[in-house]
Length: 349
Ligand SMILES: NC(=O)c1ccc[n+]([C@@H]2O[C@H](COP(=O)([O-])OP(=O)(O)OC[C@H]3O[C@@H](n4cnc5c(N)ncnc54)[C@H](OP(=O)(O)O)[C@@H]3O)[C@@H](O)[C@H]2O)c1
Image (cartoon, rainbow, N blue to C red; front, side):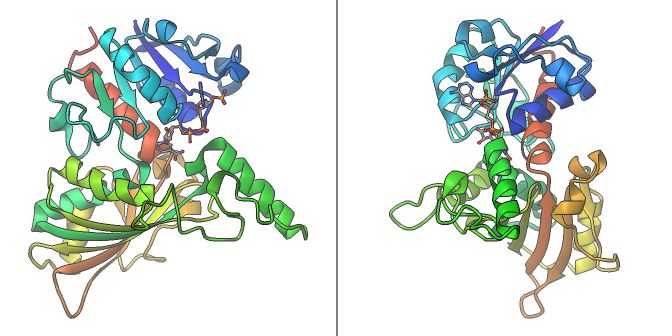
């Protein structure tokens, strides 16, 4: 029986990881959830209707987690740094959702639909990293296009939902929006989870700014696609913006291909790619929108792309609009996909 520890199980990502493992990975015989001491004792099977035998939530404890075959870490970078290497050394396969290990040379950074070859064998480090949520939906679209026509440069502006800031971020924007609409100050000048008030607002900074003015999220969007696509010279520029949408990140992308392909050809390449949903120019509306993508499981499980267009003055420059559920495509589904890959390869005994 495969025992899977979910660390940070009570959070926005952890909850979806538990649900997806329960529903979609039959080899999982036991779920062992961990969170902060404040959540200890919660019965998640009863709360969420899980069928897999599930232990009561335990306070994070490295020795207890090490008893699992796999640990899916979704409790933030601090917990991942504190536990990741020791868990891996004890023989537990670590699938990490934070940015703690993503750029380490001995840790594969994996999107199962894009670079499964990076985990053709179990990594010696015992750790597999899940990319940033905005990176995952971006490379899911870039990969088929670069295979068809080559890829020289990418410029992306993100429109990232509040649930990217976890359950606290989500609750904060819901309460502040209600307060604003009721005539209050909507959180006023207080920054909260997003640094600045997000209700009915846009915040063009996600993560700390470096000395050159680039935000941490923008660094991730630059570095991670290069590693996943194995294109170390790929030019990526990014502007990351937090928007008062509850779920699903959106991205406006401009890319430069190696050779020109007409719009219909690009749409056909994307439509033939597993897990993508193409909104063609003939569809009404010809683009996906975050509120509707999150409405059903089928929508949550796919990367949606529309507004595909070719620059009239430079036929190698292509623009599109990408929407995906940050908690599913951008985190939980990717992590469970890595786990399913490990099961399929027989890494877990
Ligand atoms: N949200 C997204 O869209 C997204 C996408 C990709 C990756 N990620 C990454 O996934 C991780 C989790 O994000 P989230 O959005 O799910 O956050 P979240 O909703 O705030 O949940 C955090 C979880 O971690 C637990 N936790 C926090 N600090 C802890 C500590 N010191 N010791 C033990 N448990 C602790 C919390 O337990 P309590 O409930 O007991 O407080 C909760 O279960 C982060 O690394 C994040 O960067 C998030």
